[in-house]
Every structure is written in structure tokens, then in C-alpha cells.
Length: 379
Image (cartoon, rainbow, N blue to C red; front, side, top):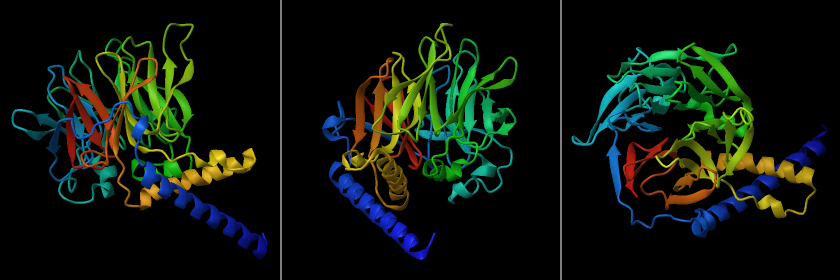
């Protein structure tokens, strides 16, 4: 490419980038929340319980044991901790690696999480009391009701090691464990590159506790994240963070098994999914997605798609590099994928960058990838 063409290309790129940032910035300033689109969001009327975590952050996911105790959650220094409501404090429950030297304490745990572990998805087997752990670096693990060092179950499938183990759920009847590996190229530490590059090497997997076999159910996914089985175990749903969608995969009956379909489109980037006792699903949104302003651009489809991809990447940079503090968003879906309720903490004063919403005994237990505490919200 000659210098004139290169200059012209850079000029167009710079102009589009500036235009994107200006439009997105003004949109976030004026429309940074769900506003009137929310069917039910709080105006400070809900009661919050904040459970501080000492020298760690990012209570990503929650699990409760067979006695209803907990929640248990994984945090940034690699520990799984348990909340004691009577003592109002967290206690150590489990770790995913024996090499703990230099793991704990007030430092940047991102630098050591590949050694210390980073527990993300959690779920418990209601029959056995075992807690299953999707550790971003260590793979899929399990620990008994008494805690301690977790046992690694699997860390690769079809010869490809897990790079970013993320969400997990278990079928209490069969013992099958369903989980996601968000990328085969990038680790959790580089989650931003999964978004920015449009990486589609994520996988949905199943671990059979009887045969010890790991099966790849789906591959070529865009940042697969949370996963949850339906109440009747006839289907599962999983989040695709990059596309702001939740998919449904039918497991039975036999004539439907294997069918994949879009379950719902979301107004933001989904993380974990948890089912409540009524068979409904709570989805946590890490942030709201960018406005699709390119739809009204007077361009042909090819150019519009190029602008859209540029917009997507610039938007991710906007979130990553700015000091924008988004609100926390929790979305409840019906068993048919309809959005039936939305809670939004405006403007993210109590909880933001939500990673999971888990409903139990009239409370929503809310996790975050960045906050140094967990939140319990009475509903």
C-alpha cells in the first residue's frame, strides 16, 4: 500500500474511531442505564446486606450445601470461602492447588492466579454434598463437604487443554457435570482479548463422573460462560458473553436432543446463570452493551458490518480503558426465555460488574468480578 492510500486509510479509521467514541460516550452519559425499558428495577428501596472479603475480591459464583449453609464462593487469591451468617464472617473452605506460597495477602492477585488458581463457577451436588469448581486455570475440580484441597477431575478434552474454565452445573440425577471453557487461546487474565479479537474457540463440555470421560458437546463458541440445567433436566442453557445471547441445548426427549437454539437476547454481556426453585433463570450482566447506532447509518451492508465490528472493538476499549462505572444488572428469565424481571443498581453504588445472581430464601446473592464483597439483596 502506498503512502497516500495508507494515510487515507488511517484518516478514515481515526475518523470512525472518534465518531464511535463520541457517540458512545454521549449515549452512556444520557442512556447509561436501562431506564424505562426495565420492568422492575430498584430505587434504593431494596435491603442490601454487604459481606466484606478481607485481602481479596471478585466473589464470582455461589453454591449452597445440602444443609442450606453458605454461600460458598471463590475469590481472587484462589480460595473458596464459606459465609457464616451467625458469626457474620467468611471462613476458608477449600483451595484448588497445594502451592499456596505468596498467594494470599493484599497484592495484585491477577499476577499469581495461574499458580494460585482462580475459582470461577461453583455448584453443589444436593445428594452428595460435593462442591464442583470450575477453576479458570486448574480445570474442573471437586471437593467434599468438609473442604480442603480439591481434587482435579479433568483439564483437557480431545487433546486440547482447558485455557479458561468458567461456568459449571451438575445433573444431580445422573451425576453428569456440564461446564464451559471460554477460550482455547486466551486465559482468564486476558479475557479482554477474547472479546476484542472475536475469539470463537470456546467449548461446552460434559464430564461423566462414572466413566471419568470428558466430552465436547459444542465448539466454536464466542466466549461461552455460565451454564444451567432446566428444572426437568430436559435442556440446558448457556451464555455467550461476546454476542449478548443465551442459547438453549435440548438434552431430551430423543427427537429434540442436540437441537440448539437462541434462548434469549440480552441488553448486556452475560456472565453466570443460576436457576431458582421455580425453574426460572437469573442471569448476571457484567455491563450493558453499546447502542447499535450503526443501524441508521446510510451505508451498504458490507460497510455497515465493518463499522459495526470497529464499533464493537472500540466499545470494548472504552470500557477497559475508561473509568466508567456501570450499574449492576440482574435479569430473570422464564423457562421459555422471556425476560420477566430486571433489577438494576443505579449507578452501581452497591454492586457493579455483576458475575452471578443466585436466588435463595427470598434473597438474591450477587457476585462481582471486581468488588471486595458479596451482596445479599432481599426481594
